[in-house]
Figure 1 (cartoon, helix red, strand yellow):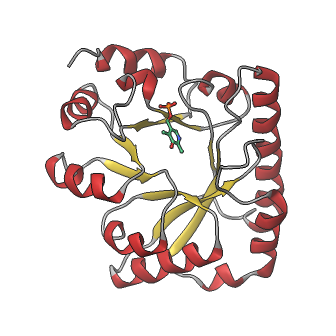
Figure 2 (cartoon, helix red, strand yellow; figure 1 turned 90 degrees about the horizontal axis):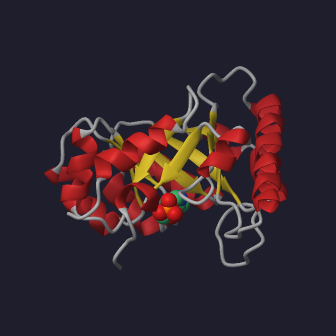
Length: 224
Ligand SMILES: *Cc1c(COP(=O)(O)O)cnc(C)c1O
């Protein structure tokens, strides 16, 4: 292992204000990298492929909190439902319903975030603000007893223009306030604002993120 995971982790944590949690994004990295982060105290890990989780979860300590961060196909939900702590990128009612169904089969309630599409890139997943408003207004989600909508997640545009990144994140933060006020005012669990990655997590924490998802900075470049 030629990456000093413990040192990188410490540096990221040192840049996070109190109340901001770190999801260590370990996709495509081997077990020894995750073990190094775990040994340094990290407990929340994010992965984006069910097949990879299938190998990593049984091989690592039981007290790890796993987040699913990528695009999730509905036919994969059943495999992760028994253990996943949070599914961060829910962008359709269909997916929400499938998570509810599989969580019910496991006798669990699964925490989820709704993924917003605010960035300029056309290829990214996520709900437009209007689509997200529509999903919430329509109200069918209220009947799903095995999912808990705990906040919002987004990816800013992949650009060096920091003012654009900040504008997108601030838009997400304002939208969080709107959704909180309109639907979750009394729900303490609706509190997560997940934005910020290796390139932009320091901007994110200035734009009210309280959950950053950092991979490359901690583990080095991914080998696909
Ligand atoms: C891969 C990924 C990250 C981490 O990206 P880095 O640039 O490696 O920090 C964060 N969020 C999502 C949704 C990802 O897919």
